[in-house]
Image (cartoon, rainbow, N blue to C red; front, side):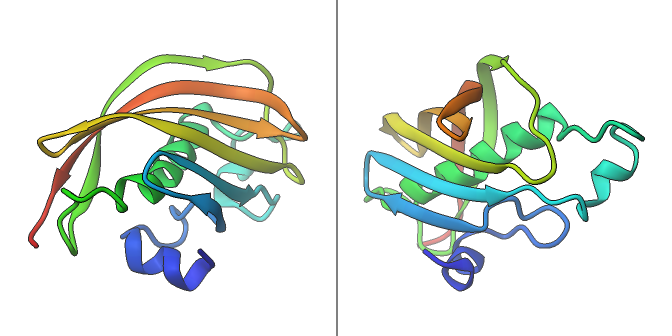
Length: 142
């Protein structure tokens, strides 16, 4: 998916759209890309003189990438939304800096009755920077 297709699936817009491209996605697995640039507004204050991508935004990027697998589920309502409902086991191993390319990859663990659970991780140059298990609740109309 390129950015035009992503905009059809995700309701997020600047400055909160945190996925630049979906590289791969099927009903089970996904891989997406986020280019981290110094121009992003959070770097102005996090932290002056030592810019680090906030962990909560890494989690949000992983959640947005996970929607790439969720929208392919038979029970996903057309025009629906996936709301983040839970975060389990979040771990942040190393910082993410401007200039990094985050690869967000994961696997759908379960999907039933409009609730999905996804294992996801964020990597930079093959090194895991963060990981979590995310739970989503789907809402919308068919």
